[in-house]
Image 1 (cartoon, rainbow, N blue to C red):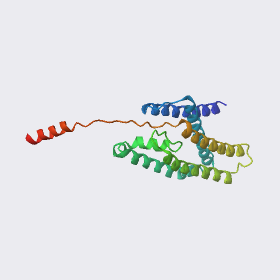
Image 2 (cartoon, rainbow, N blue to C red):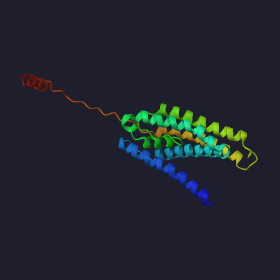
Image 3 (tube, helix red, strand yellow):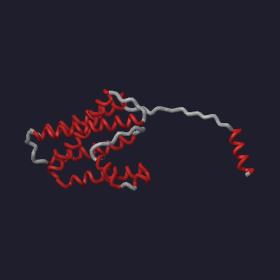
Length: 202
């Protein structure tokens, strides 16, 4: 019983930490965060990580080290993308890039800038891996008569549906919107010409 409580609390804590990170990021870019937006984002993230961890656990319980063959390419792609997207300055901190790559095995970090295409590519790869691991486990496991066989499959599918629904809700009603800032400055051409004339005479 205590084990399940610990697992549940860790799962919820992970979701809350992503909400706090999102709140921090939206605050940096002067976007208003709302309670409904936080709730939608929380449900998005717990459904995402819940289904992912369950797929990995089921697959690893049967295929053990083969889980690295599935997740290894994902890690390398995410690690390379972080290095490339952050530029040469960020690439010097390899350890931090590796941490981001590992985190992206389970979830895609929040982006305050336009990110729908990034999310699309990420989740195509994400769910291809999930259903590959789930399908191999469901088709080859010897636990088909076990009590958890059907509930495990149903849980992953429910998480998938809820995750997609919350993802779209987040973009429709809760996603931060960039604010356009107009900045106009009148040029004083006379002063510029004077400066140039001064440089020429000197």
